[in-house]
Structures are given as C-alpha cells and as structure tokens.
Image (cartoon, rainbow, N blue to C red):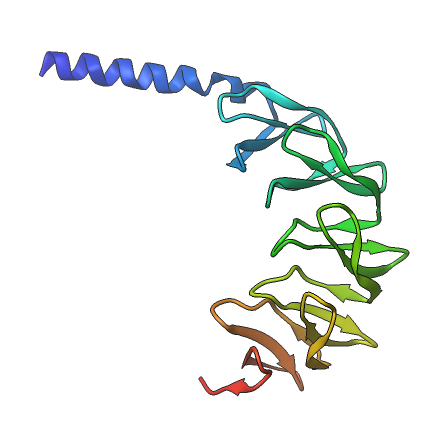
Length: 192
C-alpha cells in the first residue's frame, strides 16, 4: 500500500510538472492538428502539446487549426497559416472562418464567399452572410433570406428562410415564418 501511494504521488508530480508550461499563458486551448492556440497579453500564437512555441504570439486574433490551417488576424485583416506558421493565404479578409470540407468562408467589403486552401475564390463574394460547409452544403443569405449552396456555388435549397443552421446527420434547422423546422438535404420538411 505504501508503494502504491508513492507511485501515485510520483505520477501526479510528473503530470503536474509536464503541464507547468501552460502557466506562462493567459489561455491555452485544446490541441488540434498537433497545435494548441495560446494567448498572452492579448496576442495569439500556437504551441505543441509539450509547450514548444511553433507560431509566435503576433496575432490579434486566431482560430483553431482545422484541415491543417488556421485563420489568423493582424489589425483588421484575416488570412491563413499552416502548421509551421507560414502564411499560406494573405491577410486580406474582413472576416474568416475555419476550413471545413476543403473550403473556408471569408468576407471582403461586407460580402461573403468561399476560398480554397490556396486562397483562390471558389464561390464568389455574393452573400450577406454565410456559414461553413457541412456535409457538402453551406447556408448562405441573399436579400435577407437564407438558403443552401453546394461546393460549386449552385443553389441547392432555395433562399426562403429567415435563418438556416448547418447540416448534421443529414438534417438542418431553419427558421420559416418565425418557427423553427427541420429539413433534409433536398429541402423537404421533416416531421418531428
């Protein structure tokens, strides 16, 4: 029993010292794609799970890594870096979201569109609002109404909703005539 207590104390000691590096930051987020987003004095960067600084704390805002890239912001412009900290997509957007299904929703001059991992515009900046792709579709808004487009920008579900959420397990919540309803990927209402 005595040895069990000593082993427990040692393992707790090692576990505690292994995470000592976290105390040097104001915030340490969960590790994704091998890196954790850290914050100190309002600046953001990234570290390995062991605390090794990989991306300097130079960003005014930043998102988690997803699909091997992270959205980062300096001043009022967003762009994307890879897991080495290399700027892959120039900081030029007014807003940005994480990559999902190979595309990221970004805004320019108040309009939203989608780019690929090289920064090439895949879906034009034609929307007032947009969410990330999920299950091959993204909710987007035009003229105050929401609908869904596919990864080519083709309208798949008509613009007729007050708001639209993302698809999960083949269904999405949408606001129609001030009531939340559930639809499938063809736009058909699902009875609950």
